[in-house]
Length: 329
Image (cartoon, rainbow, N blue to C red; front, side, top):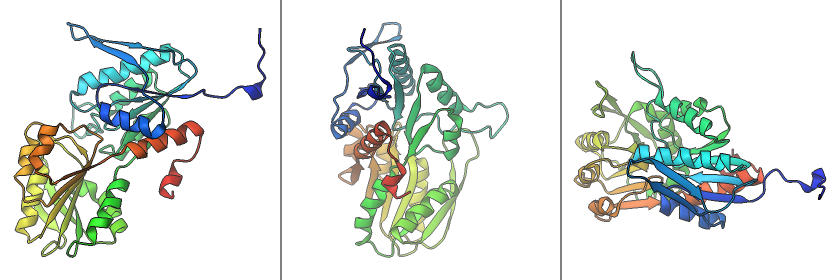
């Protein structure tokens, strides 16, 4: 029997990348950045809608990263992620990191009324029970979501990419001002404004029920005769953005640029956004946007890829190097 000394042993062997069906294009781009091919796997849905996963090769002793979105179809994608993680755990993977570009249920982050769940905590618990050793998410709706995990992880933001893009655009804007869609996004909005060295304004809105509807009320700050950079973390139905854009125009704003990290664009959101007097929509590929929805925006859509960001973090996590150094933190 071959004997190994401690110095011959490494904590992990190589990197292995697996992907669900939630965001195949993004997963492929991440794999190209890391220079590691996506591993083969079968994901089969039986007639009774049960899912079955089989790996094409062993992951024993490997540092594994499972790339899977949990956007629509939310529950299919979430179950794929959980089953993939458990399959890898049972195959004796050394470490499993759930790479989730968009994490579902992040808005359900607290009991803000009687008799309601905290579903974001439930999702975090399920990932841990399935066998995840680490997690990686981008721009959760609320920062406290990271406190729901008992395992370590990296909470990343796509706004570094967006801010870099905006610095080039801002040179051609007239007295630009950053405006947040609501007061809850004020802190992140302030960071973006500071990065661009421009002022900030806010839209006050109130939500009166449990549905996605909210009423935009007023603009706090100066937007008249200025180009506006309207920012939010995600756009779902587009209701808040529509109200915000119309309110800004009523208050004398010039060109409006709509910014978000997660382009959910549920139902007819893309058509609603297309009807708005918006100069440009700038987002990322955390959520795959169907071509038919993207085409409705008539060439006004810019999609920045997060693949280099996520790929670099994967490499640094595998090698045990600082992620904060990427952002001078």
